[in-house]
Image: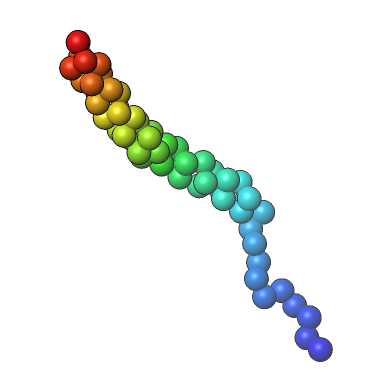
Length: 55
């Protein structure tokens, strides 16, 4: 029976992985804000127009 290490993981792997994940979410935050904010802006504009028309 051969026992050995097939896959070695560097000691700084968790730190690098968390840093990469942090950068990914930082980059995606703008897209998330746009995906939520743009439909909300159109909804507000539509409601404002309907309020003005009602007068």
